[in-house]
Structures are given as C-alpha cells and as structure tokens.
Length: 221
Image (cartoon, rainbow, N blue to C red; front, side, top):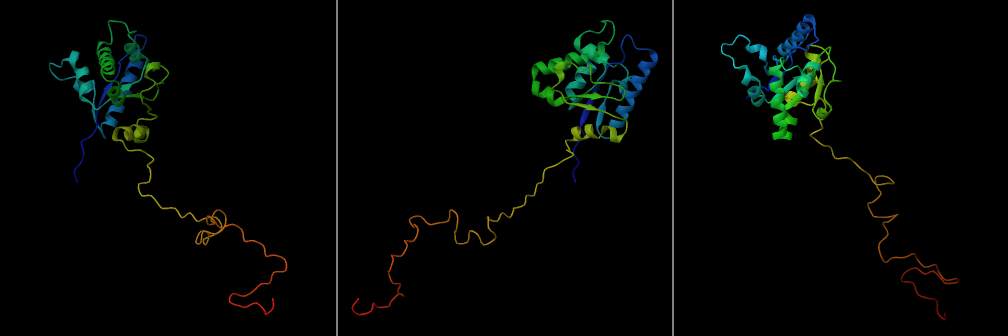
C-alpha cells in the first residue's frame, strides 16, 4: 500500500500587541506552540519557532517563501495579527507577521482561487473571531475548542479532505408498484389504460333479442 504524502501547512501569527502584558504575551505564545505540536502529529507543520536557533536564518524571506511552499496557510486569529493585516500596527513592531500578511495580499491579487484554497483562519481557545476583517468572510475558519485531538478534528478533516458525512456510493433500485396493487398495469386496464379508438359499448335496442353466436333466427321472423 502506497502512502500519500502528508499535507503541509504553515502557521502565520502575530507574537504580541502593544497593550499586552508580558503574561498575556507568554500565554498566547504557549497556546500557539501547543497547537502546533498537536497538529504536527498528523500533518507537516512549519512555524517560525522551529527555526529560532538556525544560524544565518534570513527572516526577511522566510515567511513569504513558507507561504509559497505550503499547501495551506493557517492564520492564528488575534487582534494583534489583524492590526498587521490592516496596516494599523505600530511601524516598529510586527515586521515578520506584516510581511507575511503582505504576501497573502499579493496571493489574493494574483489568484483569488488559489488564495481561497490555501488560506484557513484558525480561532484558538481564548480567542474570538470578531476581529476577523469583513473582507475575509469568504475564507474558511475553524474554531479549536480545546488543544486535543477532539478539538482539532474538524480542521484535520479539512486538511485531509475527509468529510464527516459521505454520500452512498452504491445505489439501490426502488420498487415502485402502480396504484391499485401489484396486478395493476399488467393489461393496461382502468384509468388511462383504455385503447385508442374504442368507445363505450352501445346499449341494446329495446326488444332486440340476444342471440348466442352462430344461432339462427326462428322461421318467419
């Protein structure tokens, strides 16, 4: 049995917002990392924190190239990232996520269908989708209710293209009897089954005798 290659995906996320406390920043970072480790059990996940210790890492090109390589791009929804998406972030922070957001804008301008197929919005526990820009209403989004296999089941079904409900492949031929029972329709009788050109039988004239076929009339009549 030949196994198919695992789906590849890239995580896009903003590390912090200007008004976040150090505790809030660390909590958000840990949630994203826990999600990445869980998802990486099933698919090939790429994220920036896998590469923090790589020597001579070119961060100016890493994000856009990862977006091009991956089959799907998962945007970790947060107010901080959507500020970068809309260009509202302070210009001295968030260069990496802003660069990745620009690459996604460019993908949309180049090929709207490819953008629709590639990009998925993920709402992690503790976050809300109320900050998602209105123009991204067309993009699929998945709410992760918990960082465990049950919490990401719907997302995994999307990444592997395995629907929860499937149509029946083998169809049955229904038994559809005619009205009036199983014998109806055998001789095309009744209803609209009358043959063309045959009207009602004429009533017998008064006084006319009824003869059996082949009999003769009495003499003198």
